[in-house]
Length: 114
Length: 113
Image (cartoon, rainbow over all chains, first blue to last red; front, top):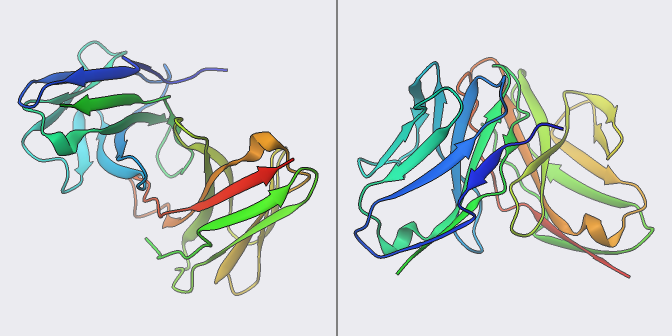
């Protein structure tokens, strides 16, 4: 069964550093998402991406965040200058088409900012 | 997206049927009801989706009464591996073209031997 993959599984970084989280969505999917989950809290939407542009972003997704689909297979989330409160599990998700709620989530990247 | 209310936690034993109810009193005409499952340290996983009456797949059943103000996810004969958080989401497929999912706190199901 096709699956979404994410690398790395765990990233430790110092406050103020830039990090790039990588995702490979399912190959024929057209819609891509990033979510995050702070330990013990609910899953929060960050951004959705379609046709090489952001279609929606949440208040969390401020100027420190950016997304890119550089080569037609990878989908990346960059945090320019990490803060302690960015420590969380980051999930990438993808779906095939519009009008459905079935998204396929990756295993996540645990980001720890020290 | 409609606000949902579900129990924070539930306990069960292996082999029992588990029913998790979600209230969504302000569900709109075009809203669908979707359930996701999340195991510890993993991403959420789609379980089932429905609009009215009953939907069944290999994992679960979803019961939706005529007024659609609530729904019940039914897991038959649970095992230890069904220990997870279960999320009820209600939303409009037509006006949510970006497709973001809005998760609540979910119901933490603990299955004991």
